[in-house]
Image (cartoon, rainbow, N blue to C red):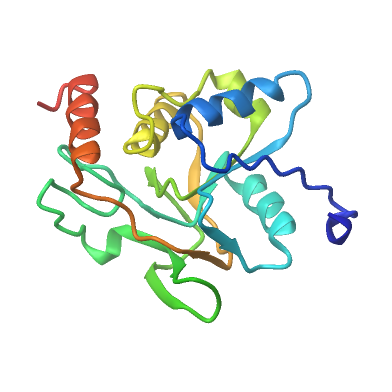
Length: 201
């Protein structure tokens, strides 16, 4: 970590994890309850390609309470992901999307450009979420552990919005190795729980 001595970064990697992301993320939130920190909730198949990412985080969190790489400026009834407005995986209009994410095994990579960033959002992609722990704890926002992998981000964003926290995309050079598991049996099971929670069945 000597490269980040000027702005220390502590990494908690849960390799071959068997717990849900929401459980792990809540553990991290509890660990810093008395020692506030900027928390980055990020998938383990992500490459941070921006040498200045700690600075970018601080800049982003001076503007928004929660930042992400990609998102949607709105949320509509029946929406199943930040970019899909229904369970047939219909993309929302490009004018509602924001952010940029690289896809591949490294750099250079294919780049998915969704729209301009930074931009205020109602939904953020859960591949990368960053927030000041103090703001989350003060607002009582946590990850709902009934959503171990899928829909934890959708639910988290709805909680944040309900609690008055601001969210937005922030430009960071990041590459994600996978494109998600939309439509899998586990995804459909979480969709059912999500719809039950929000009365969208």
